[in-house]
Image (cartoon, rainbow, N blue to C red):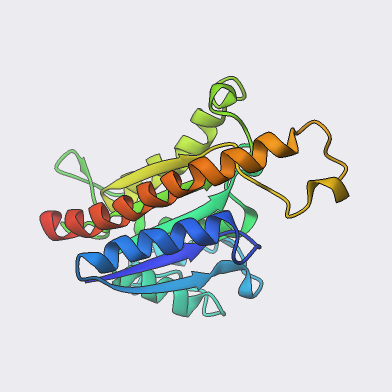
Length: 223
């Protein structure tokens, strides 16, 4: 069993990176091979709407037909047993790089074909359990007020729709800066934010550890 972990944040060593690493540790604890990808390591392009993957005679095998620097990552994810992605919440959506990745990964695996009254799955009976982790500075009680439950929830919905199984984990009220005194951000209570991070982020890390375990267990159960 192999799981691919994707840090969809431009910041290494911060919240998303830490959470995806914990998910990979959880997967490794139940025997999975793990690999982490830094999505911002190089520029990525989103879908170009060439529709090569939708041609009746297409031979893409569920991969985007564009052969660029994203191809190796797409191949790794298609061949993986599970995937976990961590992204910051940027105005209610995943980061731009995560969105570009998901366009290129999910669209060739989605189908416009109906057979016997059911949507044809490009993956057939295969399921690739996926986890999407969102890190954000918003408080839990503002999550629904700002509409983030709906907008961020679409990512989990699309992963499940195409890959067969997906879970979402939301990490709230995160620490954004090393030194708040240097930032023009007095709407935040720096001491409270740092205290919350020290007390609650280890809980988020443990929850992501358990998420990684569940994804591998689901991969074994469903395939």
